[in-house]
Length: 213
View 1 (tube, rainbow, N blue to C red):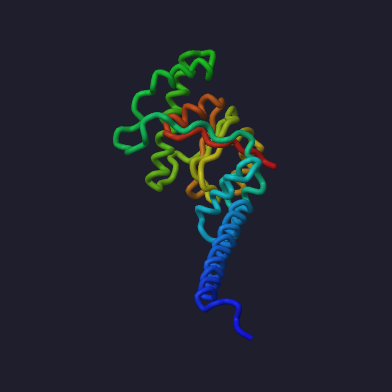
View 2 (view 1 turned 60 degrees about the vertical axis):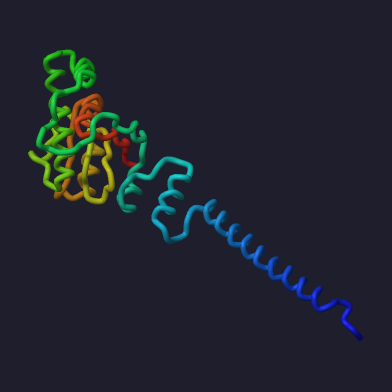
């Protein structure tokens, strides 16, 4: 019994089957890639893992090691990016207080003189706190909250990957119990306005606010 197809027809069919096999493999590869993107990540590239985390719904994770982060939650997200001049060196010092920042003194105290003094101190503290971060030096003088301080900002602490802020003595004590004093850069103020001014001096965005779970 003779073959119903010629040699040329058989070769053509084989070529088409080979092309079909290549196309099918490409489709399977693309399907797997899109499936892994929709599910987040499994392992591998840190950038892919970070992108997957950012794409998830819900509140952002606390920027800390897992055993610390699970005890805190973010109640206010990070503020807009800092739009002023970048932090470049410590030689020039904090410089003069910008007029728009100085105007915040009215929201710090009914006493104009006291308000101006406090915003100047907050601005200067922000600059020198940032200087300690950039030069890998210890905070000087060491953190010592006053009885009136209720708003706290941390630029550097063991277990945290970026600055955070929080309110109240209870959260302050819980925070200090979880981190080492060595390398800690922590400041306390009476008002949120002073925290905002501090961040202007440090040339950073106002960090996220956290509280105990």
